[in-house]
Image (cartoon, rainbow, N blue to C red; front, side, top):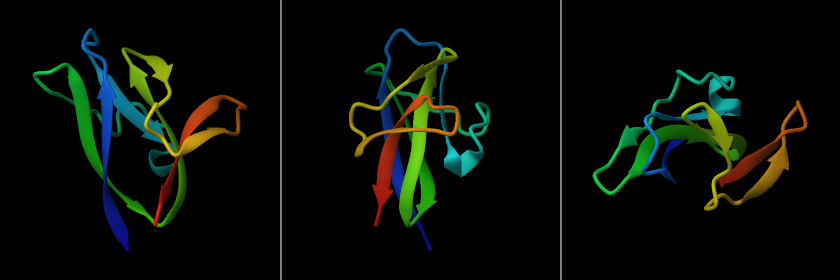
Amino acid sequence: MAKPINFFCFAPEAEQVSLVGDFNDWQPGAHAMRRQPDGSWNLQVALHHGHHQYRFLVDGKPMLDPRATGVARNAQNERVSLLAVS
C-alpha cells in the first residue's frame, strides 16, 4: 500500500525543479515539481513502505534534501537523500 509523501525544495531562483529517485528510475521528467509563490517547490508522491533514495534536480543540477532522513550512495556512488516510509 502506498502512502502520500510531500517533498519540498526551496529554490527561489530556479526555473525548473524535478524529483528523481529509485521510485521513478531516476528519470528527470517523471516528477516535475510545482513552484509556489514563496519560491519553494512541492510535489506529493505515493511511495511504498521502505527506504527510498532520491534527490532534486534544480535547473538540471543535483541537490540533496536538507530535510531528508539521511544521506546514502546510489549505484554510481553519488550522494543521494534517503527517506524512510513507514
